[in-house]
Image 1: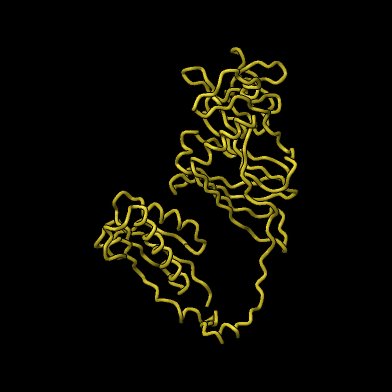
Image 2: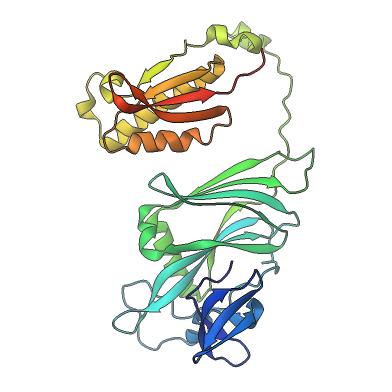
Length: 341
């Protein structure tokens, strides 16, 4: 939904300002103008900042990030003149105590400039924790409003995760593919400054150009590799050459390194997570039914990361925070789907 309850709007025909007080359906909202409430189609209203800041201020800008002029937002269904799928941001303004225009939040859009319809799964992460998710469809040559981000939150280095697939399947195209856009706070601040200088309404990042073709596995001749001393194994017997899987994996850092005092907190977490992924993949390769990861209780950050990653493994049937006789409820038991032998 493009608008939310409480959003300030302007009636395009009369230029009167009001606000959204209710959402009627996908095309209509209930607005209030000068104390009078009445329904309006979304194409009859707009955000007021386009009108409010159509003229440049004469005074120089302060060090705070400002937008002096905001052009009209792109309309749904209108191509931008180039192909590809983009992640787009529109700065939304507010007044500070000095009545200057400051960025309050960013409206986040997915823009499809291609002539194809896509299914997509989207998740926003702050500090590796998912804060917003949506599964939907974006049609060709259109925009999809995702959500708002408070401008003060961009310093937390947000990550934008997407999984795309064709709405109309094509045997020559990839069944799906993933895109992860990691943005640092400094990058976003700089983009907003550039938007200010160029007097643009928005700024964008390309997610992909053309939807990728299906990868074709070619038959490889391993004779040369064998002759050079490389070991090449039969894939059907790959388990014979893998390290053994474990039914219980202790992720306490004291079990992983001899001297953990030399490691920083982020380094410890990354080592624990990489060990978790290693033994989960070994359990899957050996077709194990279950595996238990001991992560301890502590602040719960390691457990939270493990649970988030487990959700992305299609081979995981279920998992639960289970009781361990030594570590109490500081363990997660993972149940795996079985492959046919």
